[in-house]
Image (cartoon, rainbow, N blue to C red; front, side, top):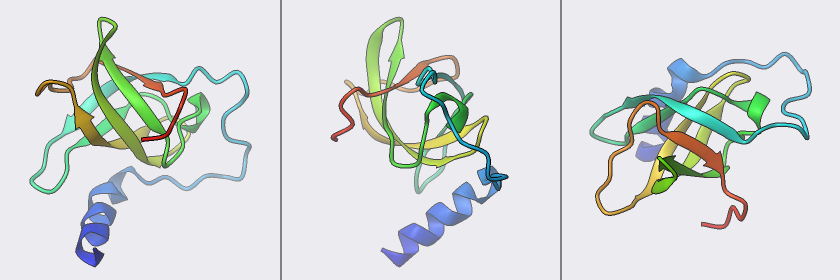
Length: 112
């Protein structure tokens, strides 16, 4: 378990951003973003999103990834800043792959 936490900390360190104490996210947040990058590694693939706290994405948030309105995957937000979030893949539909440009939306019912 310690090894997994250490690996995740190393993978997420480049994406960490300190917040300046402002309120994060608003009631009007869209809860939607685009996948900007998929970082492949042997231990865990990371999904980088085009939005963060400013659109309601928080660490622990469960999201649905879609392409042309078809579900591809379920992901969980691991790290978020105001303008960007990084997620881990929980499950993939029928061996699909996530690519830049896919749409991510917060799940209405965040239970896994």
